[in-house]
Length: 258
Image 1 (cartoon, helix red, strand yellow):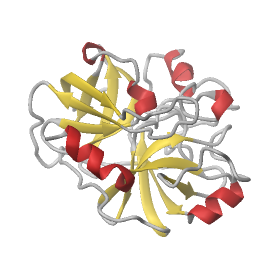
Image 2: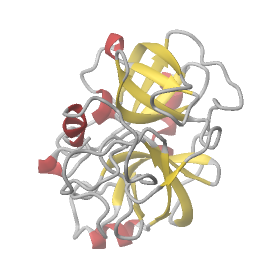
Image 3: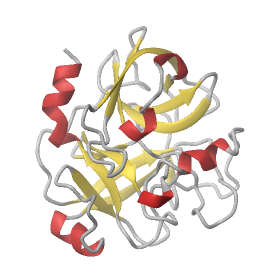
Image 4: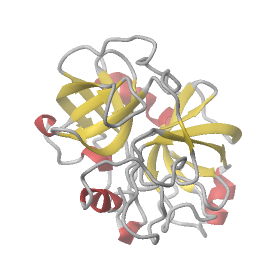
């Protein structure tokens, strides 16, 4: 989802809404420029859905009742308007739907700056774990920088200036690098929404997150360290994407999930 005025993922959601029927992507292996996941490869991945089955954001399974996502995905949404879909790399088959009973957005989320872009959703019934459905641990340290992180999602597989949204049925993933905050701020020319509570990820031009990937996980060293927050527009340019830093919100997450 992208708010064009803020270069966020929030308005991109509207572009996906314009094409509600999910189809196999004729371009094949994309996030933009990503690769097809295989069953069981990302068992923590969630598709956030408007009933009955419209994907609009991603998320991560934290335990049998709680899913992690982005506040800009769920702000103003009633639990009755949100289902979570788990257990499949395919949007149209193989997964399990769960109704939600509670949505908690960070109380200091600021839609003007996208600060504190994190939310939690509680399911009505417990999520059953198996080889295709598993929780992922929360990032337990402040990562200064790193190589070989992974992002995943069902966002559009073509860039924002490349015609109508091309939405893949198969979950896409991509390996990215985590930049230092100094590198991120320098690259983004001192942007005033690069807070210490975010992290920037870099990938080659032609690869990156896009519309519909919002709320999805950035995984590093087996833990979810980031939540897809806002991206470069058009998608997959040489400018880094921004993810909310999970480590900065561990106390808040724990207070909600008690």
